[in-house]
Length: 243
Image (cartoon, rainbow, N blue to C red; front, side):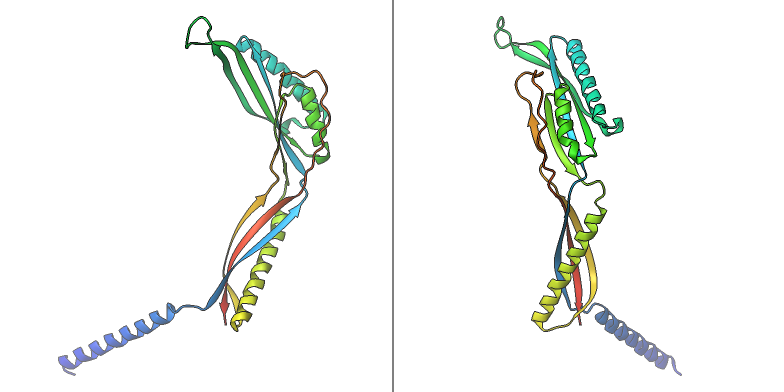
C-alpha cells in the first residue's frame, strides 16, 4: 500500500471516530423528560421539657455592696431550684453584668455623676417535668428573682417527629407528581433526584418581667402555663422521570 493510500485510510478512520464521539455526546446530553414537585410535611407533638431564664438585678452605692446583695439572692434562687428537684447540671449562668447608674450632677451643668451600681445575674434552667414549670417559676420568684426573661418549650428527641414529617412530605410530593402526570396524559416513572429542608415551628417564648421594687414582699402565685404543641416542618424537592 502506498503512503498516499495509508494517509487516506488514516484520515477516514479519524473522521469515523469523530462522528462516533459526536453521536455519543449528543445522546448523553439529551434532555430527560421529568416532573419536579415540592412536597410539604408536618408533624406535631407535645413538649417534654422547658427552658426558663430567671434573673435578679440589684443596685447599691458600691459595686461590692451590689454584688454581695446579688449573690445572696442568687444563692436563695439556687436553693429554691434544688427544692424543686432541679439538678445542678440543668442550671447555667447565662448572663452576668455590672453597670453604673448615672444622674446629672446638679452642681455642674452637662456633667454626669455615678450614684450607684447595678449587678445583674441571669440563670437558665432546664425543667424536665412540664407539669412543674409553674411551680418552678413561683419558687424562683419567691426566692428573689425579679425578672423572668422567657419560657421556651422543647422536645428532647425530635427524631420521631422528623421521621413522620419526612414521610408526609414524600407522600405529598408523590401525590402531586401523580396528579400532574395524569393531567398531562403521561406515566410517572422512577425518582431521579431528592433534596430536603426542615425546620421547627415553636411557640413564641412567654416573657415576663416584675416591675417596681426589686424585692417584692408578697408571695408570687403559681402561674398557669400552657405548653401547647411543637411542630416539625419538612420540605422535599423531588424530580420524577416521565416514562
